[in-house]
Amino acid sequence: MPDNSTTEQLLQEIRDELRQLRQAFEERNRIIDAQYVRIANAQPDPPVDQLTTAVNDLQQRDLQRRVQGMIETWVKMIAAQYDKGSAYINIIIVGGYAAFFGLWTTSRSLLPPNQVRWSAILMIISVSLFVVFAVWDMIRSTLHMHRYQYIFTNIQNENDPDVITRAFRSYEDEYNRHRNRLILFGWSSTG
Image 1 (cartoon, helix red, strand yellow):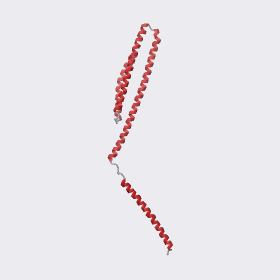
Image 2 (spheres, one colour):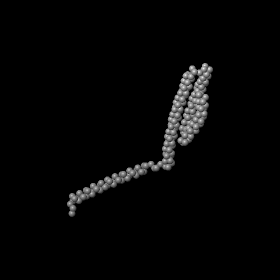
Image 3 (cartoon, one colour):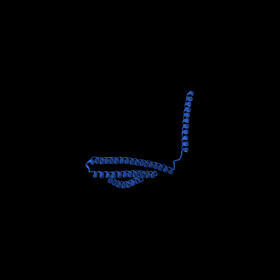
Image 4 (tube, helix red, strand yellow):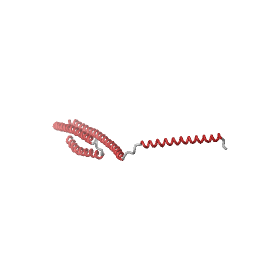
């Protein structure tokens, strides 16, 4: 027969193990209850309409970002094109008139007085036509920039990049077609 103290000790160990099992069981039940509460309080999955709206909003924002980037690119291209074109034309004009007046100054002493007078008259006509052409070109360039501003204003709400590109290209084609004809006339009449 086992000793009373040994039996007591075994019973105490069993009680301790049972207490530990009860505590572990209660902890497990608390965790399960907390999960049930979280699941019960969780919001249901959003309906398909909300998901579709969210996806459409993201696509719309991405498209607007792309369109805005396209517009900024057009603005930069137009500004660079205008600056470089103006600088090039100014260099050509200054060089041409410098050579024109330089040659006239050098050859003036070799020409008879009648030809000197005609040369002076033709040079005055040429310079006058050039000034008129330059003023006209400046006005036309200003109107051209205003037209770009008009296009920028009207496409702010446009979402299709192809429509934006077509608007700019069609205007540029029309403008360049008319401008090239008039520039040829202006250059030929001043030189």
